[in-house]
Amino acid sequence: MMQMSQLALIVILLYLAIAAVLWQQWIRPSPKALSPILLATPALVLHAVLIGWQVFAVGGVLDFSLPNVASLVLLLVAAVLTLGHQSLKSLLLLPPVYLLCAMVITPAMTESNHYFTNFVGMTGLAVHVSLAVLSYCCMFIAALMAVQVWLIDYRLKHHGPLAGLPPLMVVNRQLSLLLRIGFFLLTASIVIGWHFLEGFFGHGQGHKAILTVAAWLIYAYVLWVDWRIGMSAKRMAIFSIVSASVLTLAYFGSRFIKEVLLSS
Image 1 (cartoon, rainbow, N blue to C red):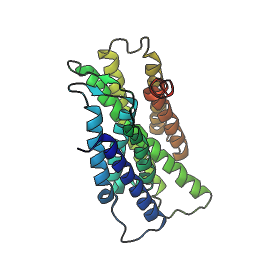
Image 2: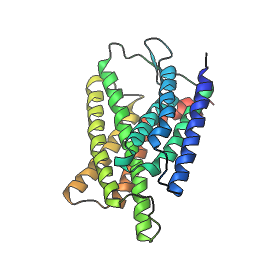
Image 3: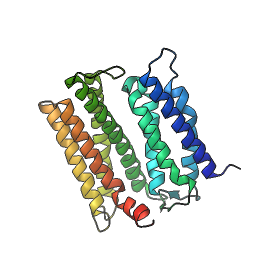
């Protein structure tokens, strides 16, 4: 029977190969270019199998360790950007996302810390965590889109080459839509967490809640200004990256210190 480390190695190699092929196709466009969906489907499916193997390792209890959560988030991000690469104009974003997927899978090849969570009889917690993961995925994709917006804006202002890059207005509209969807999911996650979870702002969790609310306020400001008077593509991109960074600190900051730095 295949070991988890062997499956992880296969998925890593697939992601690295796909990233190299897509990067080459982006640099040298060809009418015979392979579809990202065709290329990435085996890696995405095996990645999902690997996550199922890792997260559902113990019956009835989920292992939500930091590497597992990061792997799940990036699988969802990669799947959305791959399946929607034409409508989202995300071809340029796929190689770095696949490289990130390969990076977060690497801990599966070694023994890592565990963070077991039991959702039995805790519907509120399950909904809160699900919404938090979905909102973070949405905001992470928005941050990637923001980098693409910044790159297109920079090349336009400096008369750089635009071959292979989508129109700025199209990407900016997609960024605005992703921010609205992510903001709705993040709002629902905060409300449900505050209502159903004891000690949501209490000891040991307060910094997470405060940083999450801080990110929420930044997103609210961006969407309000964009709705009232409009916001330039560059400013929206900067705010999106900053707020996604704050949200990352809220979700992963303390756990990274505890599970990675202190345990090493």
